[in-house]
Image 1: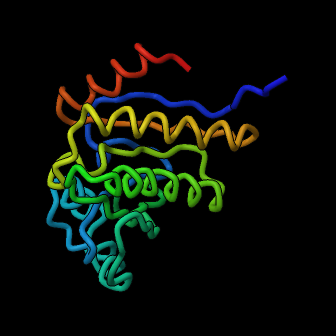
Image 2: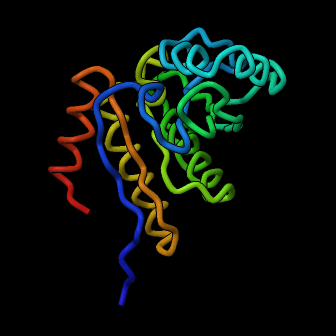
Amino acid sequence: MKKNPIGRIVVRRGSVAELAVPCIVSPTDPQLSGKGLTDQAVQKAGGRKLVEACREIGHLNVGEVAMTDGFQSDADHIIFTVGPQYTGKPEDIKDLAACYLNILEMVKEKDIHQVVIPAISCGGGGFPIEKAAPLAIETIRSWLRLNPDYSIIVFVIGIIPVVYEAYWQYLMDHPY
């Protein structure tokens, strides 16, 4: 008999920088420059020491992740990841899925049990939310099935209504 996972996905509306959870995710560019809207809000919330920590990381490739302390933000940890620029090629899907999988592997490695993940690559990366939302939800579900004994709440979050609604609608149309 297949064991039900003890992890779950929760859809929220808002900004990652506004939620007081142990770990938040900030999509960023390869130089962790804080130029994207979410990345800018996260780095502002984390303060000068977070900006310095990003400079120390230096560079990330697409799909890679790096973790810092939360510094002045409400989070204990911040994970940075570089999502793909959408081109419509199959590699885009593979690269976006890698972001989610690497985030989840890192939180498990660090024994973190709550993480907030925004819509990676849907803003400046140009990834259509109608493709990104199912990919994100199914990638997270797959990871939860492969890690059935790990207790985690994965908050997927959308600051704009269309993103929130895409996640919510996908979960309603495709129950676990």
